[in-house]
Amino acid sequence: KLLAAGCSPIQLKIGMERASEVICDQVRQRASSIDGYESLLNVASISAGNDAELGKNIANVFHRLGINGTTSVEQGQGYRDEVFFTDGMELQGGYLSPYFGGSTQLADMKDARILLTDGEIKDVQQLVPVLEAAATAKQPLLIMCKDMSEDVLST
Picture 1 (cartoon, one colour):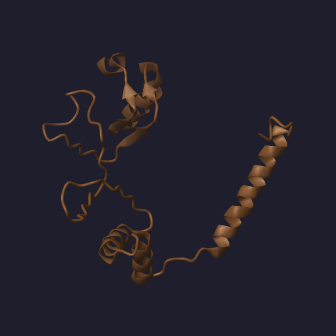
Picture 2 (cartoon, helix red, strand yellow):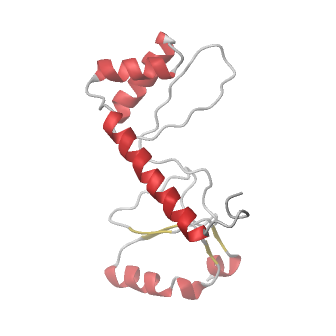
């Protein structure tokens, strides 16, 4: 509406950025740190709609995970709340080729180089420098990507 009324888009953007900084500063000033299990339990219980049992489950999860842990919540079919922990990393996809990994679908790589991208690897030429470096260093190479073309897999 402001742009249609003739307001400068650059000035509007600058104003939005300044307002964002002011709001973030206010949140930081009013925030209080969670120090200890009791304050974690209080925050979790309030966040769970004052449900003490659910708050205790949430607090236990975050107490075990620590500050850098990640969580996911899924709707269950039962009548109880359940908590499951996975140590390490779990991937949704899997191996793109049956020649990778064994029958257990587990990989054990020691001192591996890791190529991680959110894109698709379409051409083997994209990988040549990385493959040469891994071969020179005599280290295994783990490639994690969104997708990989059949041409790259067959090379």
